[in-house]
Image 1: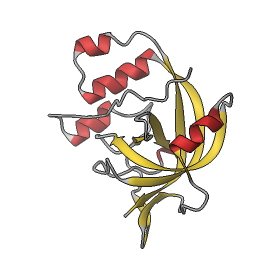
Image 2: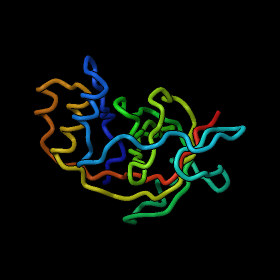
Image 3: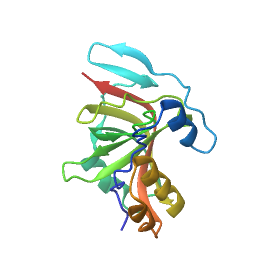
Length: 172
């Protein structure tokens, strides 16, 4: 069984400076000086490639299509559960059942506003399965400000369903 819940890990930097948080949160050498919104439409704001809702399915409708598949191109519509609080470099979408899908942005080419939890988005790109290492899980937990005990309790990698978005439309 594939874990869809992304454990809600954030990149919080409570008490630290933005520069220090960026330095500590470099994602394998990628900087965080990429662009923001690329276009504004009457019904939303675009990040990355400009996309529309046409043909988008809900995360709940999409998950069964991933059964037995390693990756699949998709356009999804969903609700943002959480966003990286350091730079907006990832977000989690949630299903009606409360499961989450981790969404990253192609080549770190754009980031999302950090205050969009609860907002509707359309994402375009591809879903894929990936084993997230213990080190990476601990990195997310540390960035979120988890305690040493909580971080130490992470001892197993997790197979997850993730999404690489080439474009996001944040709906008004």
